Length: 123
Length: 113
View 1 (tube, chains in turn orange, red):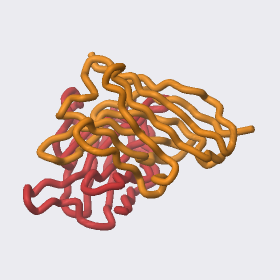
View 2 (cartoon, chains in turn yellow, cyan; view 1 turned 180 degrees about the horizontal axis):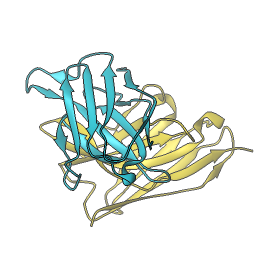
View 3 (cartoon, chains in turn blue, green; view 1 turned 45 degrees about the vertical axis):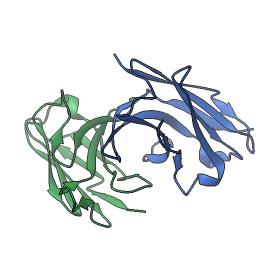
């Protein structure tokens, strides 16, 4: 059974760096038919795609966050990670990691999500 | 960015009746080379992550009840839930994967009347 589990600090101070890890079980993050994304959701609001990791391509980020975001993968641990620098209260959200379907050089829908982790930015 | 606009923002439907949720994209998400619409629908229940219901605008994900159906093409799409059940209470989102950054609709909250 494939599972995704987010982990990381639930509280981050303003101007510091938010760091989260998604541990994947049941499938390799090096699989050529899946890619891996981070998506966030502020309380009571909609979903915002942050970026993606695919083992055979460079990471890609939402331009709205690109200057502050890094997504990387660790195949030895079967994990992928998110870093967001210089956080503000606007970065407070539930952060989800998700698996995306990849085929024929195209990145498609998200077919499996982690349970999400709440990150609060506050001093 | 492609803007995805859902309507209505919320709706209440009686058990056993039909619920219809609309999604409009600011530009076409139909890829002409394969004639596929790069549009997915998700269901999110309180305290849970989104769950994939529909991809390619009309393909039902494995395990999703057949009372859920998707239709539409180009810029206008519809999610239809027939024979509404109590467990269908949720927020529903459409999402385009035609181009980055992938974007979601604002969500439609479905309740029981």
